Length: 236
Image: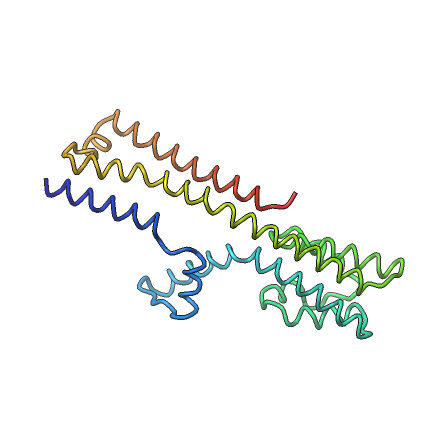
């Protein structure tokens, strides 16, 4: 009976952590204010930081592209050449984005081609529009600063729409997390009633089949929910 109570408590604690754990925004704010210790060692901390950096990279690229368009428009309005305006504006962006944009040894005429290549990266889709505006401005003439002002406004509206959709999707995502924890609650409840669910799930062929099937369906549901959320966040 003691083992059953312990298992029920463990499942309940895991469910509560999944449901009531800190939000991503709160976790980022906590890391900024109080850097957490690294109990797993430098290697584990490096892997965690790399994973977080990969997840935040598309958003940082989108923000940097908007800042790049604003900066280039201001520099062009001040009378600078497009290549000089690009270099000055890109140098003050996010360091990783700036390193991608300012590749050493690249001649100025190929900058639009370089931007078009980078546009295939997640979050860098706006660079394709920037490259097209650059080509039109240099080949056919026109006020490139005004065009880049309009492009920055359009990209800013698109990002605001994406964030609004992300806020509206918070409810479905929370529901998906709740549904994912229900099996743990069921196992804990069965253990508290003395039904020995782990003995059945791990010690018999029918139980193992039920366990694998349930885990597969649960993982598929979480993946599909995340896929639908990402599709909804991408502007049409």
